[in-house]
Length: 219
Image (tube, rainbow, N blue to C red):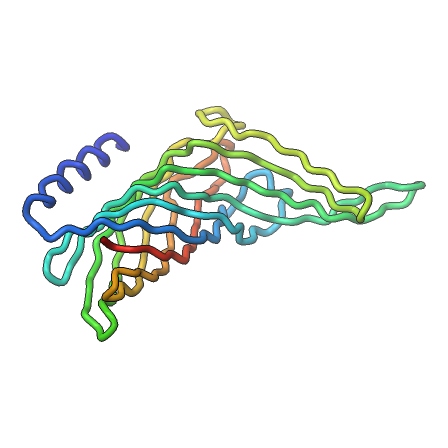
């Protein structure tokens, strides 16, 4: 599926490049990521937003009031949660905070279809489209924070495969996005990515969710 998606995207984009007005852009921004409904190795805690990043390039292929926008991004996804644990001292429990962090970096290929509308400072855009991504690196970390003198961090690399203790390397889903492209080429946008694929193999449902604030520039 991944290969078919990429081949179709490349062929369709190449065809459009010879027939339409094309702009190249770069973009970067902040991701607020989570995994739900069951994040792996989070201690049973409720998922919290994990701040990470994205950076990459896009093509704008204009069709009058519509734009086809394929791209390639390096994007971070994952999950953050905290639990309260007990450290036994002199026979008495002493509570401390345990922070659980899942951090996975992906190469992502989105293909978005945008509606554009001219406004005074530039043009407004809104749209949606599918994405497919492949994980290139990941880690779990746990940070124990008892007091100023007792802190401990344990980190484990994530492995990718079909084992019950591994992550699936492929993630696919859909994006919904909106923003403003100014007349000087600067773009400001919001994006929400909803993963459809289960990224774990342990029998639970764990899917990526990412809200992004993006700044870019079109040449």
